[in-house]
Length: 215
Image (tube, rainbow, N blue to C red; front, side):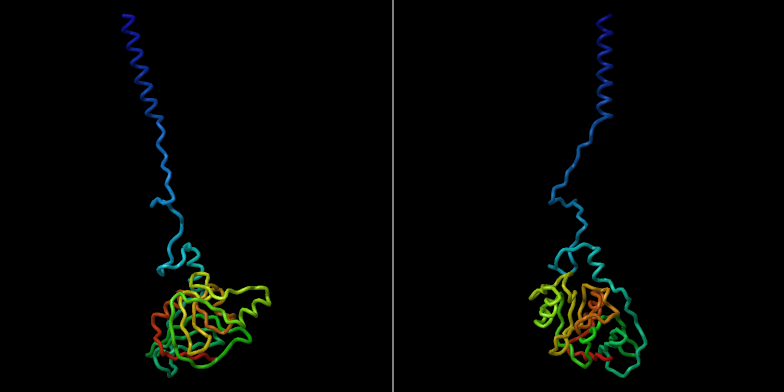
C-alpha cells in the first residue's frame, strides 16, 4: 500500500512538471540574416532603373513641387507645343492649344545671369550628367566651394531627373535637387523645375519645339 502511494505521488509530480514546462516554454528566436527577404531596411530603388538607392523621404524631398502646376487660360498667338518662360513671373507655360496652357513654377537666372531669347529644343536626356562650365568652377572656387569636373545623374545631381537642351547654348530646362529655389531667381541662367514637373513636361515636349524666354 505504501509502495502504491509513492508511485501515485511520483506520477502526479511528473505530470505537474510537464505542464509547468509546457506553460513556460520559451519560443525560439528567429534572427534574419542580411540577405533575408524579410529584412526591412526602409530603402528602395529609385524608379529609374540602375539609379542610386535612396529613401522614400529623400526622393519626396527633392522631387515634389512646392508650387503645384496648373492648367490655365492662355490666349497668346503661338503654336501649340511652344514653351514660354516668364522671368519676372518665374513661371513656365507649355502651350497646349485651344486657349490653354500648363503653368509650372520655375527658378530663373539670378542677377547677372538672367537672359532672354528664343531657342529650339535640341536634345532631351534622362538623369543627365552635370559638367559645370570652367567659369562656374572658378567662380565657386573663389568662394571656397570645389565643384566636380563631372557628376553622374542621380538625386544629388543639380540637374535633377531630366534635362531639355536649348539650341547650342549652355542653358537647359532641367530638374533640381533644390526645390526650395522654385519661384525665385537663383540659377546661373538655366530654368529649374521640380523633378516631378520636369518629368511631366519632358514626356510632352518634342525636339524642335520653340522655347521663348522673356522678361
